[in-house]
Length: 490
Image (cartoon, rainbow, N blue to C red):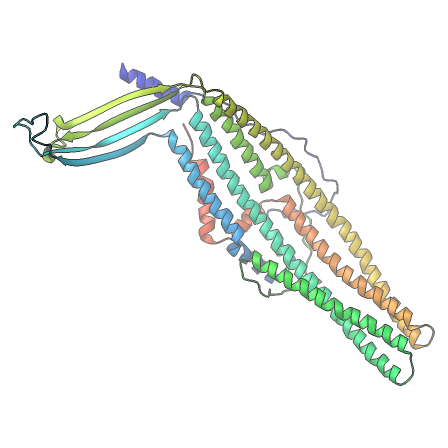
């Protein structure tokens, strides 16, 4: 009879349905296409796209960042933390078995209120050894839902780590591009300052010879000093940018190696993809969905609290007053039993937990929806940015060429006495400003393409993950397999 009851409980556990809603991915209104269509788009999202810049120094910096960045190490350690939490949570699905052993030697008073018979040894010895176990029968699925939530939280931390990789590669590429952009601006400023220095020296000789007035000399000197003042301003920004890149690389602040100039860098191709792809590619979107999965499972845990908790306990061992007879048949002891506990009145505690879990599920649902919509916005913004920046750069390039010709003609007219030097100064001032703006727009275009790859996510994050330290990547691969392969619950 006892065996029949035990078998019935086990069958109920194995075949019982978990209480609470099963997760189903919400259906969102997904755009069918992007606002800006790129006919030249290529399927590059699943490759190490930064190689398209064709700069070995940049490739090396990204490799270093993936191995040394402290934020990535923190994210990796957080995944390890949740691996441990997952195994702690799922352990409740299985019997908890322990062993025990004890040996005591006691002597009782021979002058106490109860005399000790002479046949009773005094002092006396007692030895015990055995095994004990307990198992909560998960008929209502409380433990299975809790394990489901722990698994989703683990997967969510893995996606958070992937998001760190996504941001790290993009930030390193953007930081390097900005550094090369500032280098070009510094080159323009120094070249302009050198030209104006030569002009100032020439005009100083003319002034000393009485050819020009002091007014013209000061006009030339003012433009020269203005170019000189621009140089330390740009050098300061370069120093700040090198320090920021050093932090991404896990280094102390210091100089950064340079490769190709911004004019020599190749523009990456626009990556192809559909809006619906973001649900599968973007780590932040996948992380938000895992949070929703976990919150959904927690509702089942809260509902199962309303039902009885059924547990089995058992003990098997030996007890003897003589160590030599401890493991003999007559010394054997055992017991087993079951218990059930059900809530009757909790003052609204269980109902409050259920309401709270349902509210949390709604919060994570809206967070997930917001993450999806924000992903669509970021991709559309990046597509618009790179398209319009290309057009802006072409116009600025034509402007620089026109201003170069304007400055040449203005200088020629001044040398031949057809105009004042004011016209030359105006032309050179406009040219200097437009060259700096053109260099800034070059950096903006490269940054827009980097941000587009970041916004679209893609399998390249997995490629980047392989560039982290070998030990870290191996651990991450095993962690990712554990929930799928080893965490299958009954």
